[in-house]
Image 1 (tube, rainbow, N blue to C red):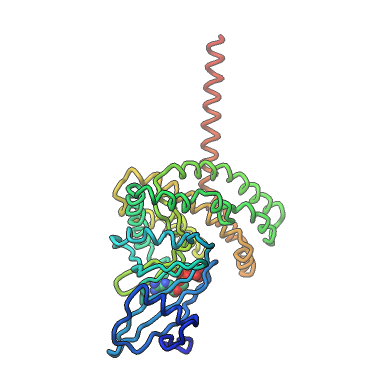
Image 2 (spheres, rainbow, N blue to C red):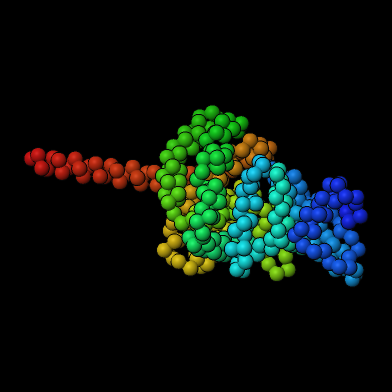
Length: 370
Ligand SMILES: Nc1ncnc2c1ncn2[C@@H]1O[C@H](COP(=O)(O)OP(=O)(O)OP(=O)(O)O)[C@@H](O)[C@H]1O
Ligand SMILES: [Mg+2]
């Protein structure tokens, strides 16, 4: 352990560390013979998170220890944070084998804080592009396990699921679901204003496509979605990949986690490699899904969330500035073209079929009138 590690077992009662110790004793009985409990803060940045801490009971036997991670989350009095609420249903993940989830050791609720204790995983941050197949299989498994759980859950869980529902207005109002707010950032690009206006107009038209897709997704199969497949939220351990940090968890819809995973990959990968990785993801996902009837809707939901999140990322001021600094403004436009290609294709197809239908109706009117 390094210099930021402190020993807490000998601190006086009433101090913050003594309270920590009390809470730890509530979730587990410390090993009888140990050399003390040590703690260190883990890197954490989440909104509403007080700290994430690694507690370690050093055992007398050389090199052995008992390790626990504590995540302390701020909350309103008498109200659970979404993450703590989700952990009530966490045992559903016990059967998962494609991606692992650290065991939950306990939750201690105080009026203003939820303390979540889980198993410490010794592992390193993976390279997202190298584990596309594991992620695809793990996402398919999480969707299958959690959709069955939701379908058969008790009536008392209904409130939790409603509060966590992806389509509730507080979540839908988040900027990440509203890329349109950031269209003005395109003006930062050192390009002719005509060209920038052209992209702003195309992106504006995209709104109705998203609305249709959102309505369709809303009525599809519900499942638990992690929605934050950032490399820092995964740990590659000896026995496989672990997923942590459920601060963005929602009752989403099948396909959404794939959309989140791909949108994070999209921004950091060149288009050609991305296209190949996306194909690989889709193949592996299709292999892992048991019910083939779900594939088309999972595919459409994935496209929907991928498009909306990838656009939001591309239009962030910091992201645009990085492209400008690297003199790669046209690369950013290529990415936008890629994201717009599908909705534009669908929009044209819809317009053509409407035109065909009205032509047919008009034809009938003329014929019957003749
Ligand atoms: N069970 C665990 N085992 C090992 N390390 C962990 C565990 N849980 C969390 N960590 C470490 O602590 C860090 C922060 O945890 P977590 O992601 O849950 O907090 P956060 O504040 O929501 O983080 P951020 O918003 O920065 O992603 C992780 O990136 C990881 O390095
Ligand atoms: Mg995290």
